[in-house]
Amino acid sequence: MAYETYRQVTGTIRDISRGDDCCRLLVSVMTDKEMVQFVVSQDTQIIDSARLRNGMKIAAFYDENLPTPAVYPPRYQAELIAALRRDQHVRLAYFDNDLVSDDQTLKLNLTPFTHVVTLNGQRFTCRPADMELLVYYTTATFSIPAQTTPQKIVVLCPE
Image (cartoon, rainbow, N blue to C red; front, side):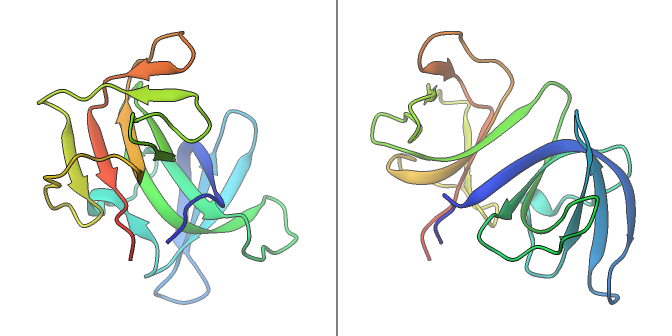
């Protein structure tokens, strides 16, 4: 699956309610600027099967090519959700053979302590290069591209 059309919204969960049926949730997320709602269905990938709860900081990804209702606050179908710890960031991008993101803004410096797994949580034993990656990190340099030593990498293997 190609993730280049995914857009990220980072914020704190303010409310979780039942969606249109019992198999969907409507999650309200407060960003720095506005409230955004996400429909979480059985097709939504939630990293580490984290149980969503009020007050949790998350990064939710939606496909900008999918139709969205013209409502306020904006409502998107969540494709991928990552729970974040304090001061943690996440980046979804294609990283080349040199582990530089496709927009040339982030370079990964791997260590033996970098936890690298597949989307279903299994250990990834190859080098995570030339692939779509979901990268968890806390700090990055101010260089161009910024450099970081990720805490965790989730490899989004092609289907």
